[in-house]
Length: 450
Image 1 (cartoon, rainbow, N blue to C red):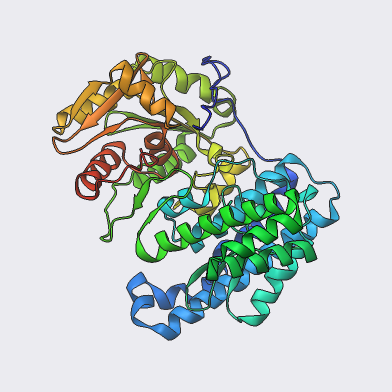
Image 2: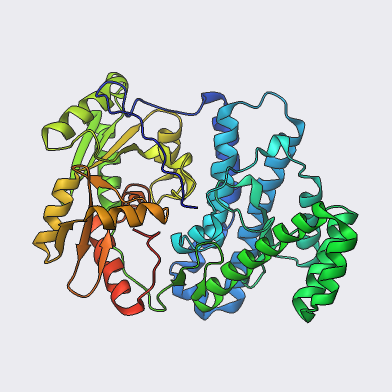
């Protein structure tokens, strides 16, 4: 069954991109958690200076990882204590806790969206306040005690890790996924599953079905599916290629580093400029529109001004628009804590002292594709229907799906382009060209990245 397409709210100049912020009373907690989760290796930064220093110096790398993991663990413990106490927690607390847990996860997976996609299954993530964290917390604590200098992140605290109960990293940087078997019944089923996977004895499976009943058989099926997903993610991370057990697509991650142009410098310039005159705007590659509003009156109406400016430059009601803080709510977006911007700007955005609006003019994006030699065409109804049936819903421009090609490969324009552009600070044209180049050499069927 294909993925359900999310219904997008209708565009309105006065309500779209309305200011959002966390409540001011959680800022002190946010700063403490951020310092632990993202800056606990601060005393080593002068010594590191360049990432290559970590690669060449195993002792320094281990010290760095141990410091990072210690802070991450302390941040996670603080979050767990507050969740289990369940006193006075607000929606701002929930967004903050997810954002901190996500920032830890992104650090563990090296900021790689390709890995995050494998860990995310588009399920509704459980509310940690209403789930039984106790057994998973104990398993995480045991993992840390058994492997000093390591980290064990509880999956349910994040917004996107939906494979395994724990995402672990050793003191040497090796990633792992752990499933926690809770209760005697589950442990017994798990032991049978391990026996069956090892020996493949069909007679033992027959007796299991006869003796254990429907509920145990269903649980065995769930465990087998989860084991398959865990094996797939582990294989992708270690070997770079694997077949997704859910979609059946062959996933291949390029071995060579792929340079992806960034508009991070423009973002930092706009953030700094807004501090002196109250607002600042920029247009990146003639298609990505950026506005930052920090003066008190401009913060309240900045979104209206931005929408009007964007519309006057060819933006349509269906063009993608977002606030930068929306990354705290989108499972595969980079949370504010993980962005390469000054720490104070992170808290200014989170707590409403700065509003950052982003829009992508799709017609201009397609024009830019043509200017760099790419071919752009509308999809046939049959092609668009086929994509919809697989759950890979294409973006509709002028009510039609769009294909972009380079003569050797072709891709459908999808929301993943806009996710990368708006929340991972990647230049849209670079994303499209890189994906087409990879498609041309790998011949995979994975459309999730575009």
